[in-house]
Every structure is written in C-alpha cells, then in structure tokens.
Length: 115
View 1 (tube, rainbow, N blue to C red):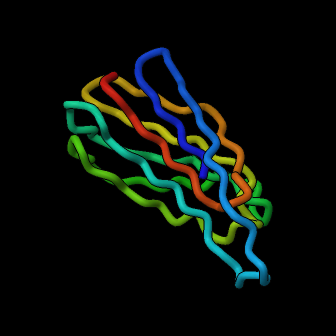
View 2 (cartoon, rainbow, N blue to C red):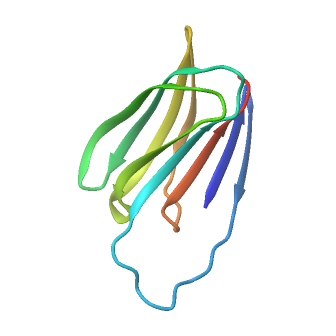
View 3 (tube, rainbow, N blue to C red):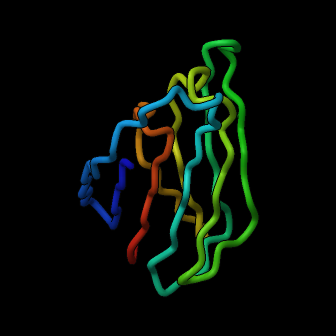
C-alpha cells in the first residue's frame, strides 16, 4: 500500500510492502482511502482520475469529511487507472496531493494532517 501523509508544505510517503499471491487473483478494483487526521471538517474531498480507457479526467467527490473520518473511493479496475490527484477544500482553501501514480497492490491511502 502506498501511504501519503500530508500537512501544509510537507509530504511524507512510505511504501508498505505486501506479499505475492501464489495464484492469479481475479480483476481487482483500485481503492483510494482519504483520512482526515486534522481538527477541522473538510468541506469537500475530490479526486481527479485519468484512465487508460478514457483520456478525459473523471471527477469523484464527497461533501464534508469530519476529523477522524475516512472516505474510500473505488477508482475502477486496477489495470485501467493511469493516474489521479486527490484534493480537499475547507473554507476558501484548497490543497492537493499532486499527481499520484497507481501502486502494484491497487491501493493508496492519503492522510491529511492539520493544514
């Protein structure tokens, strides 16, 4: 799993290893988990997603994400996810991760700290 922890101006990323399956697994969907570890409620949580099957960006979102809560986005089949950007808004502020490339284990976790 690729885990990114974010706060104002700082990014800490850690690649957490996983095992290799002995058998081929059925097609798996890519999941993006967004965690609010701050003390404020985010007004919006958004994802801009580009797929190999569709060069046009697709936008996913959720209104409000309270402190201590998480939102899991299903980005579709792993092999179709080209890249994505995750962002949050609160008040008149907007923060984003920048481009994230998909990880081999089909999961990414973005943890937002106090902005």
